[in-house]
Image (tube, rainbow, N blue to C red; front, side):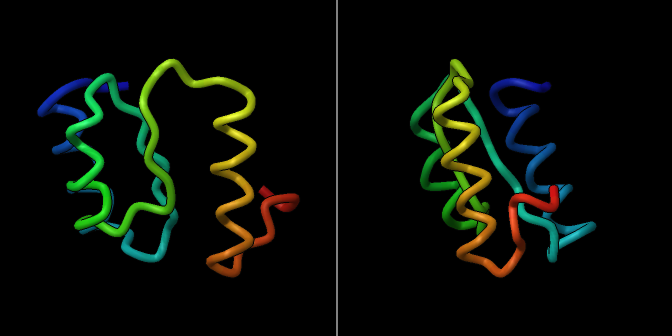
Length: 71
């Protein structure tokens, strides 16, 4: 929804407010990958968002204990 530094701020605020929720971060800038690791995002990838990338992100929920079929 937001890009660049605004996108990073959105992710940062989301993690601070609801740290238990998995965050999927899709960015135009690969350099935000390190920030996504620091912010403990469940999944990071570059745009464009494809069905394959979304499926991979949703499967990541299984690894953190949230069945993705229930989402």
